[in-house]
Image 1: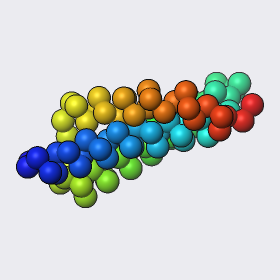
Image 2: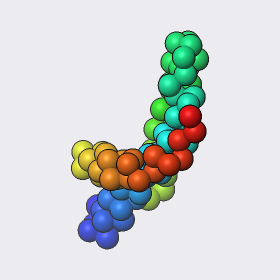
Image 3: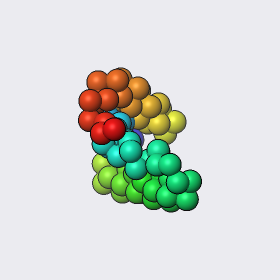
Image 4: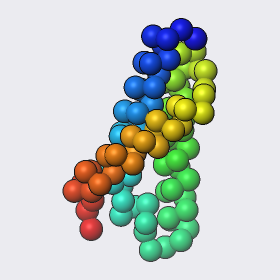
Amino acid sequence: MNLKIQIFSLLFSFFYGMFFSFLVNLNYKYLFFKKKWVQVSITLLFLVDMALLYFLILRVVNDGIIHFYFYLMIFFGFYISFPVLKKFRKK
């Protein structure tokens, strides 16, 4: 993988982490629902959808090559934007 594609993949992973943080905050009340079976099913569906979307877009970006530091960039994007995006929570 050349440097241009690698940098683009890192930026994509960072912004995907921010997007993931936005959706977690948007769906906060459904992800932490009081009934356990609803909470487990919605969380599982949400995580599978997010993982599938990430891998499908990553396949377009760099032919589906995955490195450990892409996951670090997702975590870093999530960690940076989570406190900022808390205002989207509906309690």
